[in-house]
Length: 430
Image 1 (tube, rainbow, N blue to C red):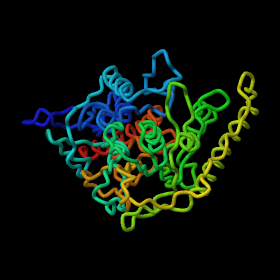
Image 2 (tube, rainbow, N blue to C red):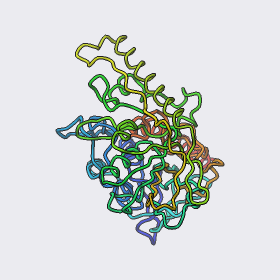
Image 3 (cartoon, rainbow, N blue to C red):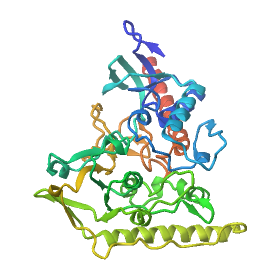
Image 4 (cartoon, helix red, strand yellow):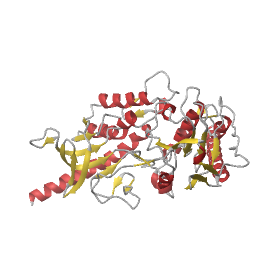
């Protein structure tokens, strides 16, 4: 690593990684094994988003045995449990320490600009030059809150899942949660249990049981190869990358959390939020259709698991195959709520996130603000991206999915640097 004179926290490296989460640390481990000069820049501390942008009771959707990074895995006494937020922080921080990752913390990237052979990276603590840039800042930087939020009355408190910490933050009134993926369901369950009436707006979602035939659903998705499905084998990869997280919760009793469980607990279901007019929330009438579609897709997955079990002859000792009750829809689903009557005090937006590339001054963004890439190889020489949903495999956005993606892109980086070095030698010789 070459330091630029006059600034102890700036320099020139072969590879610069932005983000010291699990993806950035995974690629760092690969680069270190290849003795490639690199540095990781992190705006806060290692695992910063887990420290600052998660609610208190959050647990991983994946079981502990699935928590692993290159050369590192869960070593506790509860492999079938689910890590809490603080345990995830400890896991990732421990990995950074044991791998001796070259992390510069409290270093915020202000801009990235192209050079003739690499990139100029300006931070709050100095300037870096690099041949290769790896963006591992994640896909969940900014809450994706629809414009319709601006039409809500001023007396309604609005929170995103990034801002929410616990029910004590909420008004002592009903709560409207928009979005029914993993986050929306978990918050609906927690807030309803706090004594507040929850109304949940449900759009397209992925329904899954926590356990199937006595084993975690993630076990079956792992052994059947579902999680290893490659991005270039998918007909519509853009749509696949936009699919919401499955309706799962990590809990000590390994329970299934779905819309039926929430309904039984008193949560009121509504369709997708369609608009706000004169202080009234309007919901789509498609609730029954989207729930039937989610049930259908779940049953198709379970059918494929049963077929695999028969083909492999591994059914001995397993629970018998079962199918779960269809999602129960009210005879007259809620189609509207008047925010003026005081029933709703808080709206929680569980509508997902989007990445923040406001610092990226390289023409690689599409019309939706997403980076153009082919399996993590960005449409700009020497630029790569890690940690996005379905980047190279279905498991890409999970902690355990980083290893294979980092290995693939690491090999690409090595080949790229070899070409760059050879080209430089030729130019010098001439």
